[in-house]
Amino acid sequence: MDPRLEALLRRMPKAELHLHIEGSLEPEMIFRLAERNHVKLAYGSVEALRAAYAFTSLQSFLDIYYAGASVLRKAEDFFDMAFAYFQRAAADNVVHAELFFDPQTHTARGVPVAAVIEGLEHACRRAHAEYGISASLILCFLRHLSEEEAFAALEEALPHRKHFVGIGLDSSERGHPPEKFARVFARCGELGLHRVAHAGEEGPPEYISAALDVLKAERIDHGVRCVEDPALVQRLARQRVPLTVCPLSNVKLCVFGSMAEHNLPALLQAGLCVTVNSDDPAYFGGYVNSNFLTLFAARPELGREQALTLARNSFEASFAGAAQKAAWARQLDAVAAASG
Ligand code: ADE
Ligand code: ZN
Image 1 (cartoon, rainbow, N blue to C red):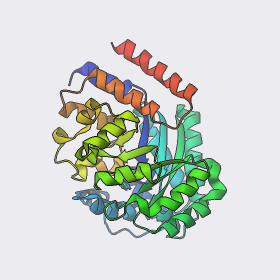
Image 2: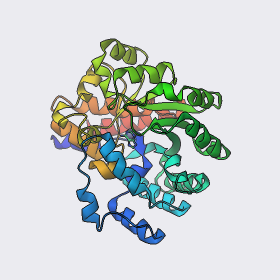
Image 3: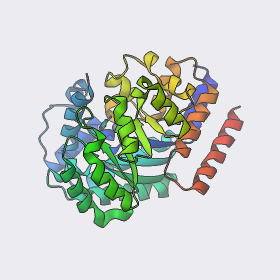
């Protein structure tokens, strides 16, 4: 790759909008926390665990991801995990991050939601103080569980309402359409929470339309299968619905056979508000800059102009205020001018 393009990709300020904080647990930290909390793991070593990261589908990944999260017990565990992510994000010039977390994964093991949110929130504050990163939290409901359970998770989290800006929908997509969560998303709308949803990762384009129409999602996480419905692509472009795309994740989970086959360039070409994100970086081979670098290295049609568009889109698609977005856009312009 042109070294000037590589430097721009690394240095440009960017927002990360699709990051499951539990997916940032590196194997070394899994083992450290397992020891600290006396949790028995099914793998004997870091190497054996890493060797299991050969996924064939979303579900094959989720089984290992939930097992990895079982080492998280106390607020300090959530703090350590999230602060390690922020250190890496700062190195990648992430200036804003909206972190997904899965409370039901932890409360099912008897971990109080207060410990989850307090630990994560403390790390967000520290990231702002040490790195100037602005960070917020998005509570995700597990879609393989019932809507009743999602309501219970919301109820439990509401005493901590000021610490999260929105709600999302993740976990096993196929067979769990957005309609299943219509009422809980409506309630979250009444509470003034932002709404996002995973859709069109493995599931069909109809799930993307339902996430918009039924759940009133403001952003679609993944959404890459929208290309199967040209009218939907037109709608996403016209309404500037952001898609938080995760290139390394999509290749690791076999949504695309290789980076050379990824449709992100086509989505950009169609005028969609696409962003680049890392999803579960500890499992998929890299953090946000690795996603940019691997994608751009594989796709010669992507250059400086697309890099800047993707960074600009990340600010536009964020839930930050207008003045903050304008300030980041100016920072981006300054980096672009210096690298011109
Ligand atoms: N949970 C963590 N990563 C996920 C993904 N890529 N899709 C759905 N649920 C997830
Ligand atoms: Zn995701």
